[in-house]
Image (cartoon, rainbow over the protein chains, first blue to last red):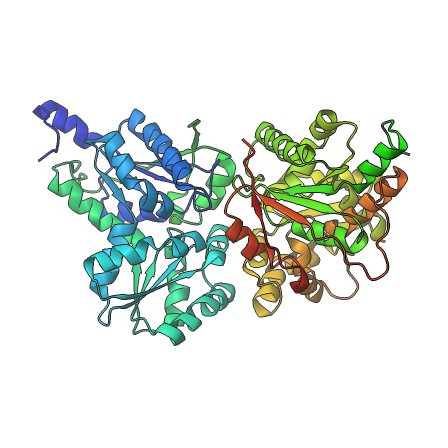
Amino acid sequence: MLAFRLDPTQERLVRDLPIGVFDSGVGGLTVLRALREALPAEPLTYLGDTARLPYGTKGPETVRRYAIQAAHCLVDRGVKMLVVACNTASSLALDALEREFAPVPVVGVVRPGARAAAAASASGRIGVLATESTARGGAYEREIRAVRANANVVSKGCSVFVALAEEGWSHGPIAEAVAREYVEPLMKAHAPDCLLLGCTHFPVLADAIAIVAGPDVRIVDSAATTADVVREEITRRGLAAAPLAPGAMSPAPRLLATDSPDRFERVASRFLPPSEAPHDIELVDLA
Amino acid sequence: MLAFRLDPTQERLVRDLPIGVFDSGVGGLTVLRALREALPAEPLTYLGDTARLPYGTKGPETVRRYAIQAAHCLVDRGVKMLVVACNTASSLALDALEREFAPVPVVGVVRPGARAAAAASASGRIGVLATESTARGGAYEREIRAVRANANVVSKGCSVFVALAEEGWSHGPIAEAVAREYVEPLMKAHAPDCLLLGCTHFPVLADAIAIVAGPDVRIVDSAATTADVVREEITRRGLAAAPLAPGAMSPAPRLLATDSPDRFERVASRFLPPSEAPHDIELVDLA
């Protein structure tokens, strides 16, 4: 059932629209990748607001304004759902986006990740690995406690992970040494049985983090859990695209960026499978 | 001799003004630190445009506009010289700043570093370690070749160094492993006898870089060489402050930032000696 009333032809047209995904940069491509895996038939449009990254160091009003401009760019091109693949915008701008673009459904990355971690932890001791600004903002802690009031949550800023992910150094001795530096003290002091990757850059480092955390710790990835929620919402609202014909390829995502398509293409390739190397990045102006 | 005509009282007032230093963030604090060492009697004002960092990914017109706004903020508070402690603004906005603020002298970081490297290299084979955008822009190569036409210059983007410097991980096994990853291939392929640290963040990593490069390679630091040029210019123009009285302390630098003084203070402490831990950061609005 669609939340807004459409005739059957309009309904079919809406179902054929892409899901719009945006982030301040390339990190949200881990969410795009998870969406491709969870929903292979869905067309996807991704916008990286690379000219104005990072959002994490900016004030709440600025982040809301930027998020609305980014979402407008996607909605103007036609999307049936908005996915906010950015932690900062998810914690600061979700309500504003829902008001501005109703009835288009809006899904952020913070709540799905937080709920999955709350469900995955046996002991209720959860570590959140995030950027410094997300860790300090406490959005994941609030969302986890909203569904599991007695959870014991510790957030840890892991800024160097972002640089490693963008440089393509997601595996190997440097990635493991950096993971050890961040994760070992957290394990010793807090003994979590679940680590939530609360930054869209971090899923590419999941293996290095798991090596340090050990086999008894569940790694919950907000990209994969967001894709699960998008699939549920799309099904519940009757917005799913027609299934792929047997043997048909997934439609290639459309990629937009606000600055330097060259750098976007180079860095984005580190977040996507080799078979889906990005190309034809379209430069857009949001201001 | 002052470039502009002033009476003796005005001359003394100008000499008492601080030198104004700006960068897009905290990296330029290595230049501030070098200026303190080279010119202990000079009052200094530093502005970090932290709300709009990084400049390196933005277009030339935007960088020029931001640099002029940052410089205005300093000139409005009274400075006798402008030091552009930012590679991107030094390579894109120096002429515009000189035009806008004449007769205030303007010194950037690119030319002093480039000239010092050209002079320090025996073989003429020079490696430039910089951010990805500085390395791709080629400003250091152009400035080195302007004074040593047959120099053989290779620039290497080393983005992870920025994250290590800001995290305070400038020494130890991770810093050395990252330096090895960047510097060893450059040494093998190009055999430079001089490495120019072409990013204001990198002087804090000089020890780790030197360990990897080996004792026969000269490390030239654009922060220290910029401070040398500022000292020469200040002396040549008759702008030097009165020497410190015996036993007197250097005046504490005045620090301005455009966003989040808390984060500025925390990260800045990693670029300054412990005895000069930053405090009383003033939040300013440039727009």
